[in-house]
Image 1 (tube, rainbow, N blue to C red):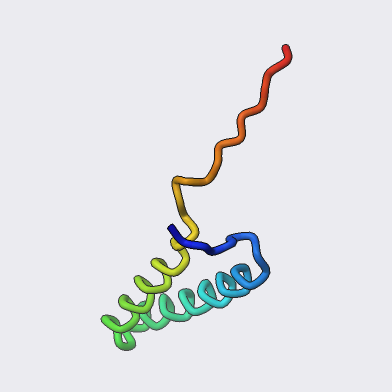
Image 2 (cartoon, rainbow, N blue to C red):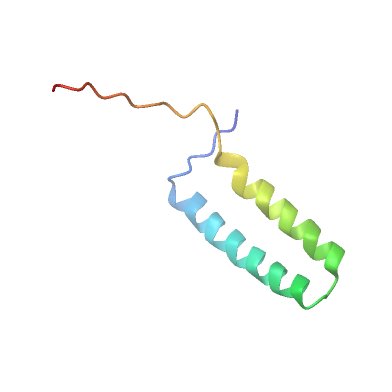
Length: 66
């Protein structure tokens, strides 16, 4: 289990940076510049961005008073 607070300002800054790096890598991949390297970079960034995806997030149940 990871200890990343996905709502922290630090994580938001990391995701902003990672998304911009991912877009640059995609542009380079489309331009056929070091294609294998760009694919690796995209894969690593995708893995980084998925670190906060967990199935352990609590489900909030609200009572229905109807």
